[in-house]
Image (cartoon, rainbow, N blue to C red; front, top):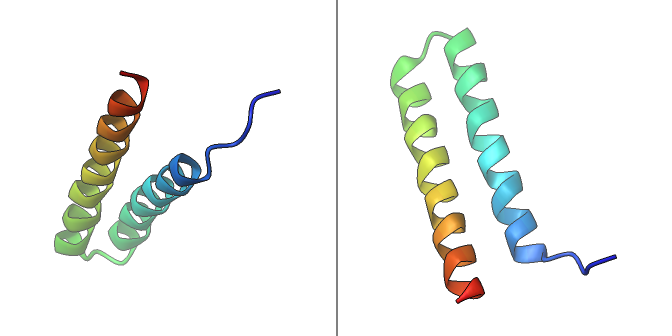
Length: 57
């Protein structure tokens, strides 16, 4: 079994939280905040993918 990469786990959890917050803010009909969390989720995901790409080089 491989070791857990805690920084990457934290980034993945942050992405899940950001996209969950999109759903919550849509329920409250706050679309500006939903859009903000949507963009934030993709930004965090892009950061994680870039970090993982640099780690494998």
